[in-house]
Image 1 (cartoon, rainbow, N blue to C red):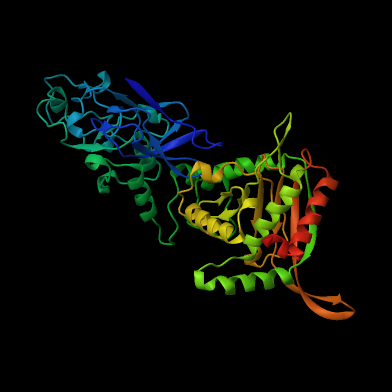
Image 2 (image 1 turned 180 degrees about the horizontal axis):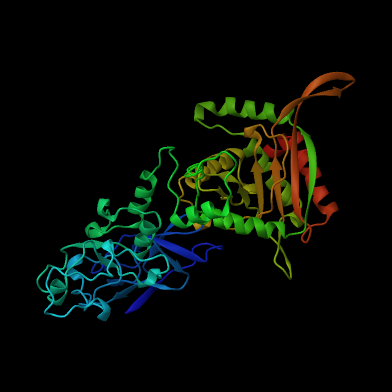
Length: 463
């Protein structure tokens, strides 16, 4: 027997959600087979088997948050034992109902129609009841004492509603009618996705999603209503959106970023030649179906400048500064789930068209939530471009442990004096955010100066 534990699938991961089992108890498993899908703080990833055998147990249910290193399954040789697994086993494998608790027991002479008064319908726990105490299988309707004393009379599946403790807790918090739910999990099991769908469908007349009862109680009790407002004013007006795993990581990492002593340097770049070069390149490559953006040229220029200034291609680790041999540029990508930074590895060794194709592929993968750990790891410097939104200038926050990030604004026309004549030129502002622990002001200024020179003489990008 060997245990399958929750692995560390990203550098910021502390726990993962077992989103879906792909192998069931009794399935033959080969080394490398995908056992389950794991949702991490960055993406959905596969949990692979590291040895062959038979899946004997699923130790956690779908939708459970599992800390790194905690066992989630057991793989062994031969068929599984008669002991049911803790995961998504079939209802036929469930044990017979346990003896009722002493306080809910009734004497055998009691009439069959007598019910235990303290057993609530649907077995919904009170707010102060720990979730861990909720059974994995609960009665939908009250069961009389005679039925309890004769477990062989009803079938094991009669009158049962199967759901995970997490799903039950969510249903309770949002006042979901359990009788109205139809499980989409194995053997009709109600899983978290079913509860989420019910929550989304549970809307008030204003169209706002119903809030958990704890949130409503806190809001109603903690805010005074304004003058002239009725008692029903404000009910459902605010939407409470729980933080996603990605948003939690963004919050934590940005807080860490603010603790870093950093400074900003801004430079204005004349991009007339760069814009013309990009137009010529796209015209020449159109027949091959290749199209590059200004950002692709900028990423390549940054990579060249980093190669020329290795002191800028560094990371601060607490007691040392790591000078990276490879130039891996992270590209900030906005997704519905939050900001992700996939990495273009060895950007200094790739052509602009190669960088462009890779950036498009990485951005699409990021927005689909399918980035792998390798695609988000190993960055040595980052670029964040908001020019497509018309933002002329901004400062980007550091992506620890990288020592620098470049914020790129939109190119816009300005009136300039050139060769004694007043003319129009396309100008673009770029702002460098620097970790002062890894780079001094003069070092960062020299890097930004040479980057500006490369962008203003863009043929150097192609050579």
